[in-house]
Length: 375
Picture 1 (cartoon, rainbow, N blue to C red):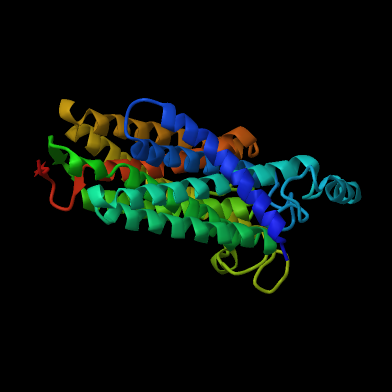
Picture 2 (tube, helix red, strand yellow):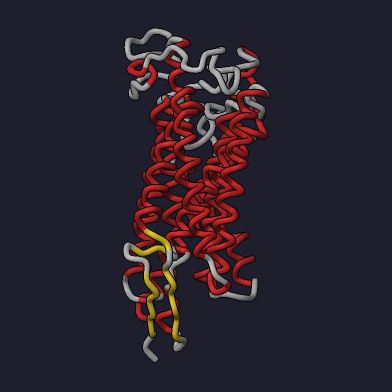
């Protein structure tokens, strides 16, 4: 059972990690502190997702085999003897000094995001008179989501990297990124402005929704490939083991509740199941390319000088799509290099960001809306 002192030490670390960027945002001129904090949370969550991928790809997820601390300590310095003992028994195992630091830095970053969201809740509460209740309710929803995400982070460790838990942990991180982006792009403080705002919504919300569902499925498939270590199950491209349609076992490959490396019966998972997992991700990538490519081109077609921001987001999304193709192929051809794998995860997060940003210009019935704030 973690001690009270451990929680206090971790809380102090989170306060320090969160306090430094808060001080920078407070002193940085420009937009309001609330608005800057909202966008900084988007940036921090994106970084957390990429570092989480780095933690997984370096096999550091069990670098500290307990939670929330490391062998009951708040940092690997205080647990050095335990870590070195575990490393001496199994030098290439999951516990090493470097892996312990990677895992704990990942936890520190997650705690920082949680601490910053608490600050966001406080600011939203303070601004209730001027902004209304919606920012506070939205921020409380974000706080609940980050707490659920933290619980899955704990289960990732305590359930020994069970694939469905690790996959859900990544999916929730992307959902958190999407929600934070949607929150940050809201015009909360327009309500206290006397400026007339014109909102042009030329994009189809139905197309955005289709793109989001497609991307969600593909990210799940990609996470399922990664957490089952099935990236090299098909070591050639574009075929799989020289076949245009390899042997598959869908029931074994997509049995969700099972231990890492095992099937539902507790036996070692078969190579056929692993190549099924890989093949599903590769096939659905074609669907994602078609849907998101069409959405990006449609957004570029609708963009005007007034909608220069939409044009930039559409170009970013199309560029990231090309990056995803390149890094996905590189993962196979070059045998899963760390940089390509990291960029592939970062690309998934960037696509989520782009879709949410594009929703700012979307409507179920695309029209030009005018909104006049009260003076």
